[in-house]
Length: 502
Ligand code: F0G
Image 1 (cartoon, protein in one colour):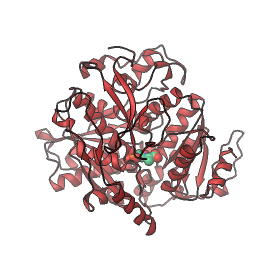
Image 2: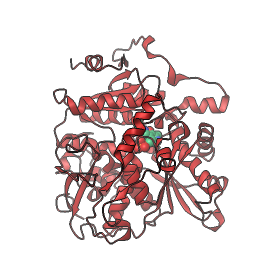
Image 3: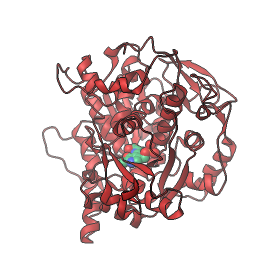
Image 4: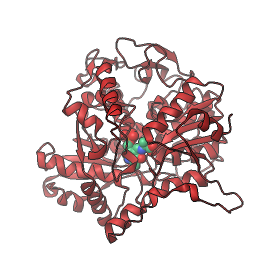
């Protein structure tokens, strides 16, 4: 296969709203469609036969050098080492390989978990399988590294020097690692008392300017989005999952699941839903693979939310919101290699629902802080994902989350609370009869067990350490290169001052 992206496809950005469909160049920095404000996709015009088969990727799992310094021009062995970039022809938005920022992320494992499968009600003896896609193996310990390498590649393409995100923890940890290695200034916005210490420790250690804003994740995201979009003089490149380039990297989790199943498509993919970037990326991966003729079937998707942060579950299952595709589903195979992935959705109804939540002061609350999000920015793309993958959305409560997390640990893997939601989802969908006992299901274990040790210790001992809610304003750092978080009011001027840009 060619090593240059250029001949594989033409890349551009396209609004997902079928009534708009505005297109923008791939090297334009946008956080939303300039015409209608909706989400953007990275879109491709693929060359016919660009990728003859998925098997061709198998030869690229390099374990030998030469390696480049992190953040330096990657060698082809480094690209092949990365579990993201060895699939580079399937995310060909970059203009040259020198722009790729990689740390060798995505070398993760798809583990067959028969003992766990039996506990969840699968018929292992007759072919029922639970496969755990263990993303804790990533450099920063969560699946976010898959997208961050792609986001930083775009950031470098457009000569960004400052990057920022709002985060429940993992995105900030991943952002801070890549920024440190790529030599970019990094701002992390975290909510007040809403971050597991494993994740906070990473942002501080990797040198991010960490602002603890007096508000929740949704408030942090609104602030950082405003600064990135409306204040070009500050010059921050936004790394939240509204950034469509990040989602290109997250697609590769699906490729590795397929590879782990010897390119057989599982019956189900289960993923926890927070800001809903990942489920969106997974569906885009399958829509593209199907259109390119690289898979013959698309698995069903289950997005599992926490009961205390179940906005998608509510809008789909109670308010009946859905995605109406603009054209033939690529799933039918009738749409050609460059299908129209735009569609229609009731954005007024979504805006009304978010306004109602604001008025009622509804705040997300769950032990799985990673997915403690009430206004998911990728909601419309998640509706598309549910359409594309014949998907369902469900929610599970906190005791179910921690118990299924503990079950994953008991059988030898380990994950953080949010990841436990996808495993709890298997049991729920088995009980409902949607997952059949002989199905093959793949659960994405999104983050490492050690990301949030407090929840684990609390579960096993009954002792609440409450570290995640400690008030950082009393911190008195004394190290030579201490990098304490900055507590700041939920106020634009105060935030800009704390960022050091005022
Ligand atoms: N699992 C973990 C461990 C996460 O950190 C996240 C999201 C999710 C699942 C949900 O993924 O947002 O694509 O639906 N964490 C974000 C963060 C929001 O800031 O780290 P999603």
